[in-house]
Length: 155
Image (spheres, rainbow, N blue to C red):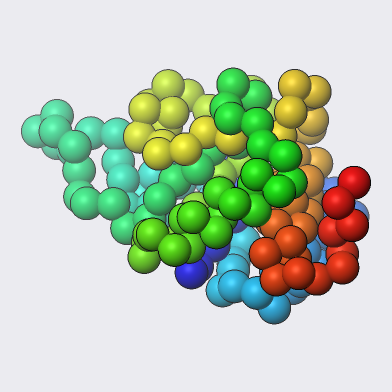
């Protein structure tokens, strides 16, 4: 399984970059992972092998990955439920799984239309850079749950 975390825009805070790097390193113990900043939504769609519409107005090239957006309107999981989501994906899908963290004002409708999953980190509002760190921590936690590592004590 390959996991990619993509975020729109440059990282402004050095502490956020440091935490991003730390969690990517931790996750890499369990699965192939990479993090990537992208310029905008179109770049995100192209990275995933999708474009909203081709020149003829039809869907563009076949998907190269599965796109999961972080959005407050998405499905909320417990840590254990999120681990089961990743486990199920890992067992059934050979495509890379791309988690996308949008810009401060959220994703546009075109991106939401092509995403296969929409996931919420909860009903609270987080700054988009902080949401990335929370997502990374939860991905790491999910893999520790699946591997029986004591990081997650069940609280």
